[in-house]
Image (tube, rainbow over all chains, first blue to last red; front, top):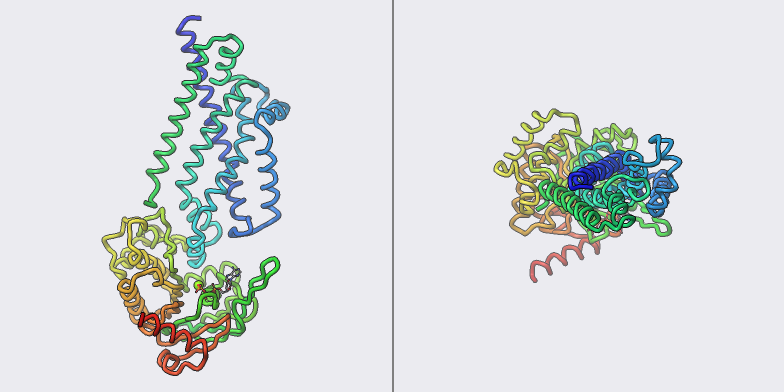
Length: 219
Length: 252
Ligand SMILES: Nc1ncnc2c1ncn2[C@@H]1O[C@H](COP(=O)(O)OP(=O)(O)OP(=O)(O)O)[C@@H](O)[C@H]1O
Ligand SMILES: [Mg+2]
């Protein structure tokens, strides 16, 4: 293989890694954000306690989060085939990554929202705010910075998982690293992929933290 | 305007095993236009009592009337509507830290469905009332305690309430700032005719602006009436203790 073929291979890898990371994080939030909100609202100190709903969601989140990702990936193969149509490749890997991310994100959102000062919630209630107002005009607004910081951490974590997904189902820089570095002893390619993953991680981290601190008015 | 009638109100908190009787059979009438002080030792039930007045805390027994409305008989949405006539300010201000001053003041209007433009207009007037026009765009973290409480007062006035509940509103402030906030409250009472209920453990606050006072001890209402009468002739041990404590405080 000549240099331009390598460059093409790595370029392809970067794109696939970004698709898996951002795609599954995005989908993870579509489900995880409401889960986090419901966990916060229905918990015993929440604005509308409901032990039944809380316990069910809490249980599902805990179960999914306690299964190691690599095993979840294999367990989900039949379901992935049904949902995506195939069990390998970049698009297929988004599904197990999403299943892994959603409960994790739910927990992250829950912990961000629970940091909001109960006094502010009480003040809003005293002004006649509905639960809807409290969720969308108080909780999500006051927790903004923490939510963004956690989204950054989540994206970084998912990036790491895409490498694992790559080894099983193919796609992305992780799979290139394993194929060339582990099976073919091509250290150079492996080192380059690792550097690329580190660079992407740093970019995500820096952008996320910059946005969070820019939007924070608590100081 | 609305009188507040507290009619045989009791409140018991039941945790898994323990029961806390925070309020025992309280009866009290607060007339429209009063500045009513509520004093008592820590844990006496002052906050619980005042939180029953807007049903943030639902009494275990008894009734609370605001004007001719009994709060316990209202539906959830009627209660929310009623709450916009009963504003509240707090010891720790409880402002939205991620919103600037003007948006904090607009908050109660926005949740009532007032347009943003109109809300801002009203908020700017209120900034004048509390003497903070130059801080419109500031965030709470950039304000002093006294300024934060002024913002909280402006926010409390936005919904044009008839009643203002103050839970230790000056306890986090130095004496000078306290007296300027009290001056503002007195002005609000006189110019807007708003009834004010003030919880405090600072006897000086009661002397400075209240016309009536109630003394709570272990959840019981032990004494109430005109400030002058109660302070000149304290009948109960609780009242005497509180007043003696005050003397000791000002001596030391
Ligand atoms: N949510 C609650 N659950 C259980 N007990 C409570 C709750 N709120 C208050 N209490 C108890 O009720 C009693 C009265 O509390 P309250 O906060 O009304 O006192 P307070 O007079 O405002 O005291 P402080 O001056 O310290 O603010 C206390 O014994 C308190 O522990
Ligand atoms: Mg209190």
